[in-house]
Length: 323
Image 1 (cartoon, helix red, strand yellow):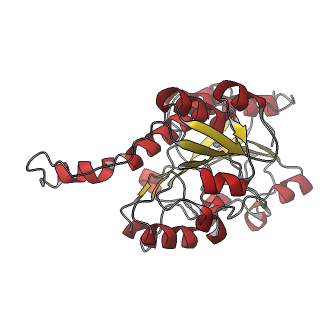
Image 2 (cartoon, one colour; image 1 turned 90 degrees about the vertical axis):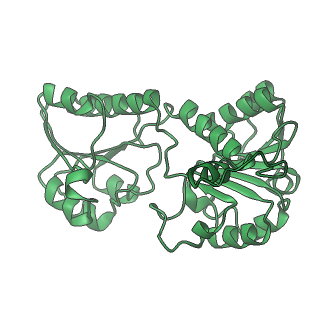
């Protein structure tokens, strides 16, 4: 087994780093709490002698950065997505890339459910009322939200996460499930009695729309101005996939005009959300700081995949989750 030089761009809780060191690997870790947010030059300076980078979705590993890291042969991404990495450059230069798929399904579906409930029931506004000491009495017309029972729910992307979320919504709220994507999916149809429709039909008919598709050129700003024009004026929109799937300017204008529409977002185009983002102005858009995988089981399983892929690489074996 090769002993590798590894650079991790952020701290990962649990025993991952300890386990890698026990295997004889040399590890350097960037600690945001002590050193601040990592920059391109920080990555280059710390990883230039390394064989492996353990990267986060927020790290921009483009051709310019990777060209200055001649020893890197493996990027082990602590996320499912990998659009922050120049995959073409990696393929051309013999750099393997792995991610952490298939272990985030339940965690992300849980969060989609939380976003749906918090948005529909005005949880943020109601809690702020308590925190700001404005709760004086029971208000018969205060914080009235949207019932989630028996609504038509459109799933964009019926993969593992989309299907799991559909099951939860069907079971908890007896929602009627329709879905769209490149192909029909038997599991969501069999477990949720879901109907396959085109995107235009889904946009027009749904009371709730949740986005679970991968981000790609084909899905870039899939939900654009034209899509918003087709939606119901009181739509409940959930996105736990990627921010870039939604045209944020079009979303802002739609939700500014339609006060009864609501959105629950775990992702935005530029993370963290810019201080001057107009999305901050709207009370009917509920935004979380990309915490879809943030439960104990999912994060532990992600770390295990990182460890397994690095060990496979060190031993010359096939990688478990090669991109």
